[in-house]
Image (cartoon, rainbow, N blue to C red; front, side, top):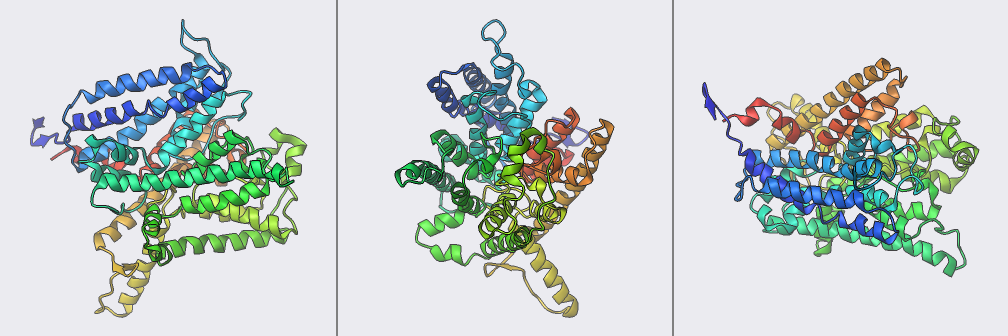
Length: 546
């Protein structure tokens, strides 16, 4: 198409065709909650309808371009559309649960919070982007089927390592343009090519991801089984097979969706200690695990980003644990206490003061959960003092390593920014000096450094603009959010963290926001998961012109 020198050069049909391929194969993981529903004798309509929709729509889109040719821009467009479309299709089971199928299936749960299409989209986008923010007011098997609850967890597991990365790993038709697709979706400045073929790299990453997931499931369920065998039934009494699978599916993607209303607080200290190292692993660059498994263990131990990542979490944990141990951490009750009552307060407030192990455990758990953007909670940190809450808010901006499943800015970007600032101070005093910025002994390309600064600036600008818009919207509807709560809501959705403070804390939900506020946060989750650039690039006129 050409008019006055303007030409459309993006082969959007190719992007839509590959989107159709991914969408068609989405019907396969939907079989998992379908089988679970059959096992528990629950209605299967939510998943049967969604499978038919995904397969039909995917097949129709595939036919737009039988032989798609993917370039850089087509890859960006395909990845951005894939994450948006998959979230829309992923909301269908929630809507079918609430409304049924007119004339065929009666509503299963007409009073569900997810009966609102905006709420259903919010929950689905939060799942696939591994944000973990929820609009559910009552998380229990009494209000939602086990199939629906498992679908929430499964959306996070699919989104953790990347839907497109998975597609590149298993679909031959995506292997040709796989490098562009994985680079557009990769969490961090870039993805390391581990093998000569990009599809093999994708399979290696997903292999490590699945291995950690299975190991965690086995350990969690093993605690449950081992307790009675060794005469300690309190070791993991609530961690049955369903909960072990559910939490294995949501730890490694740094997702945080739990079938328990009180998150990981519902489980024993042993369970919390087991989950911590898996959250740390989820926030580590998975390429390092591949190198370690292939015999190059020094690559992991010598990685500078990994050192900074562990160091930041260690420093924040020391601060939080010290305040908790000194008894300066708690300020009383939280907005969620009215929901759970006296028993809830007994389980949270006062259980840390003066005790070494609980102080270290809760501090370490919450710092790791927030920094890696997992979003689990071993305790309601709404009961903590403001200095501790601001410490956690600071942690929301750090994020995991590049190449991990974590969100936010990422440790490597902050590390490169600090090294670049240090270089500028040095060259100011020594104008003739040539001093490249190095990472793991290798000089970084100046273009990569500019990209890191551009991303970080965009992230900060989006955070402040989003906070202002969301705060004024809450004033408009009379919601009465504090500035800290509004800041935490935007930081938690843009950084794919999950819980915030106040009513949207770890034991609360986002259901009280207006529909405009929820749509804004859906957009923030989408943009944040794809690290801003791919989505914003597709929205510029220059993207579509020659």
